[in-house]
Image (tube, rainbow, N blue to C red):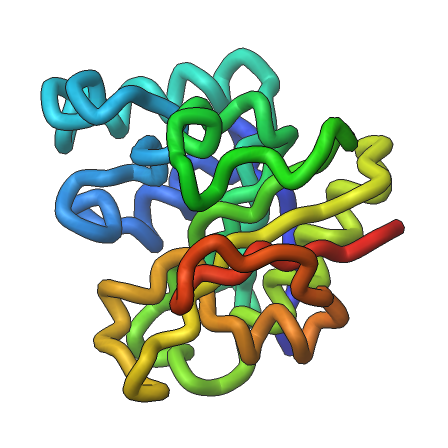
Length: 185
């Protein structure tokens, strides 16, 4: 059975275990969306790990962990949009309107759990977490590859099909391969 828990200081060792020594995708530690490109490049690797840990240690919950039994197997980054400064600088992902939204910006799933529907379940858990935190709209920025398939490393924001299965609807598309999806609570 899969369970879901917010990333708290007590669960930090599980986050480190899931992300491994390389910080999930090449030292990202899920900091890409929170920094300027220059900051991200400068902090790549260990500094990103320390910064996300500092964020967690202050009581900020940057996302949801998925577990099979006691084993951490998945991650979904979800928080109020304003926590992800990169979104504000993107011409493709700039705000749809003035509505306050929570954003789902990243997933990381253990290789053993990929292609089993875990991303859909993580999305549902992220929506539930956002709801209990007072969100009215949850937004995501998945990819819809032209060829219908893309290497795992390129779909870290999720696939359109997963968002659709989790009940999100497309509200805008400024790029052929990048829809903006919303879940209204």
